[in-house]
Image (cartoon, rainbow, N blue to C red; front, side, top):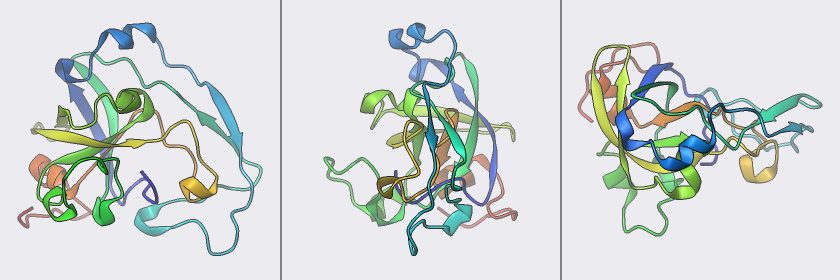
Length: 186
């Protein structure tokens, strides 16, 4: 995923049931950092700061992760908002148009949960702290292994427990977007 970072609103959500569980998760009883990135100043005119994105700060050290927290029946995650416009997702090989994506429940997962694309086009259940839940399709990765470079728009690596969801997911969960409750149709 490029050019989108923590959205204008976020909340704690839970990834539910075994849709994310796999035998490979057993290899990571805990999730520890795998490295660090030292940031340099982005060139002038780089680093998209829309949707409350942040740019890497020169000389700041950012932690990277190849893993995400182990998944159980209720694994906490930080849910953030993304428009998923302009086709910026890893579904290039799929015959899916942006207009269709904007009408269905889609999300992106941190690197460990994305599992090298093995979970792409899979459905998982998200339960918000509102008590509501929704199934959504995984369409992209929130790269928690790289950042602070041109490919990642000079933005830091993502957190390793991040789920970035479309507006349709937020509406289905009845959570506010941009600090306001949004009751418009998806």
